[in-house]
Image (tube, rainbow, N blue to C red; front, top):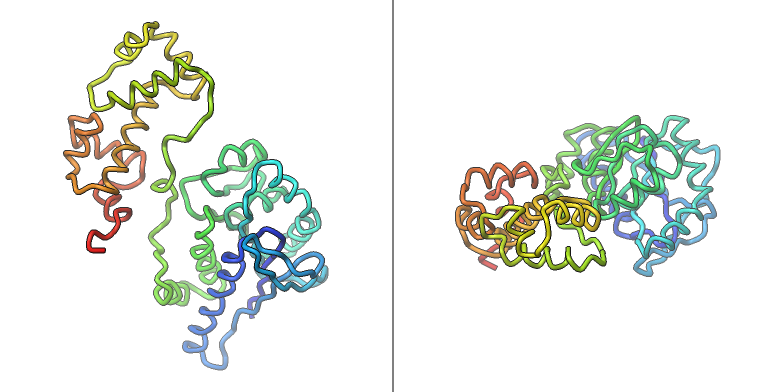
Length: 330
């Protein structure tokens, strides 16, 4: 019987704590139908270092059992954590030293560890991810890289797996993560049945379509603010750097230097991101065909636009619309 420990602590997300167990329960139901009374069913416990109830971020009290140091589990799940800001999040992680030490001992004894979303920070804090591939929630990429520079952080995949360590992106990806655990311990057939019975889209393998290209970066450069506004008003035109520099009354070199300092990218790179983000919005909200969308954001060649869109977003404009535009009949 595969044994699982689901770690719970204050400010964790109740959905990922309970949802992971729910998928194991559904896997057990399929196993019973498949193997009858001979089925090797999952067993799980909700655990914490103290055994005290954990208060989930939504106010739900989660009952836990105290970790027994000599008990080994086949798999341990680290749920996502509610992010209340940089400093408070760091303090929460610092309070998990006992849990981190336990995770290291369990992994060295042969356990698999699956960490979800912000829970990947807790796993990274153990040092086990150093030199290994991992992913995390995309909007905390910079903080993760700064805090754990030795981790091979990869944001394209929804899931990464390296040496019995499974990391997942933003919170709802615990569904795919739990299916991966079922696949590893029981097999792909039962994992597939779980996905179908729960309507889980297993084709969602990349985070790229969900990640905004224009990340909000605070800066105080009024000239760059003016440049951004000018580009937003004129992005449908065939533009060159010299056009923007002339409009602002500065040299090309000064413009590029100020942009790099404020936004860590060139004006042309910013313009490309601006155009693609605008195209995404049009594909999500309008009935314009791809050619018209391309023209509205400044691309006269629809084929070039489609190739660039797929390269940067991870899917074609048509596929993006199919996935993200609400059903027009509702």
